[in-house]
Length: 501
Image (cartoon, rainbow, N blue to C red; front, side):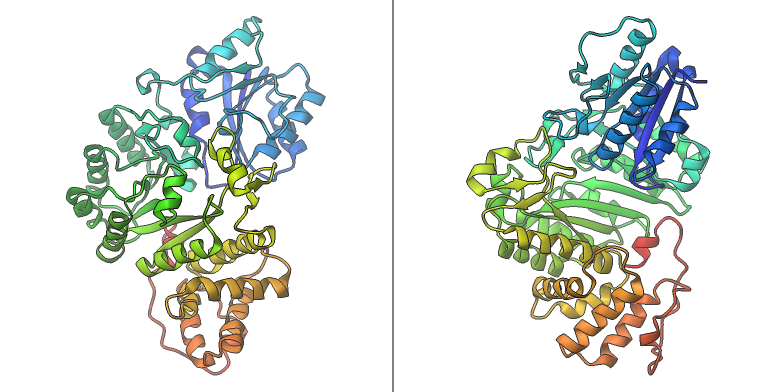
């Protein structure tokens, strides 16, 4: 039996919670009385409660995020009904800023901000029967020097099957109004030699899938270079992900990025908008020309897989403005373009635009925008479907080359918008649509609506689908054409999505 249960409810099986492992690593003498349990969203709350209470814990700590807030609410309601004496402590981004838009009244305590050390102190008080008088523990900024690192607490199952999350810094120097990271302006660095030693230990254990959670990986170029050199020295296959500042790629960084083999490096680049005035309006600092130059370099002279972000619904940006951004970014790169819908998170300063720009948001997670004075509710709904179909067909790599037929006169937005509307009119859904059905909808749209010759579309679509070895060609493509298909390397477990690009 364990006195303390640390609970993670992740969005996917292959995710892990680095936050819980930090808390476990810093529990000091209480560590041998604690256990980490990780689940996935949408699992039955009663079943989760049963598994947790089998440990007979006195304290349950749960990490709350935008994707699991409703699940956590349901879970703690059940636990408190069947085991009211058990103390429940919540922490994480979703409870670090008020107002709380999900009701967490059943929790006993809420730790705001970084809970790595505060959780230990609170547990000690509870176990010593010295209960704090206040339910909410205010945030306190931590120096990385104070922390025990969490990496040895990734299990062998994690090493074999999941992303291993690591960090070299906390905080972000930028003030983007839609982002919670802007609340933590001070960038605090971990000792790099210690981090590199931990990375080597993980490598020796067999970790080949690293995801860095630093908000600004290339802020400190010296640190970035040392990390890149660590991986470039490795001879076995691996996959590493960094989030980068889009306008900060000096020569020495470019040189190393260009040296990474195909399928080994992914860079997430937050663009959000290419309109200088819109960016300025939300306090996002952008050097547009430098960004375009860097994207061109990364796209044409490196094998890095790029994941670029655009946001629909930014204050002051019309649908026509977003369309211009997408068309421009599509022309710059063949990489993934993630289309996000603006969300208003508690703690951000985005609400200052609400009246001027008529910003209306959902009060349920993920707190996405419903409409503003430039984009109606109906158009916003269409853009949410646009984003979903774009991810299924283009970002996934499944039908990417076929989607390129839609880029008529440099305008990918208009035809994809019409395609999205067309598919939805026949499915009344954006979920549980098989690849075969998606392919048929795209094929019919291209050949019937846009009058593109069937033979041209079939040749490209078959190559798209056959990129994944062993994948079945849909029946409607088999009848009268047998194109010459290039022999494909089998995708590794590390980069299946990237290999489709």
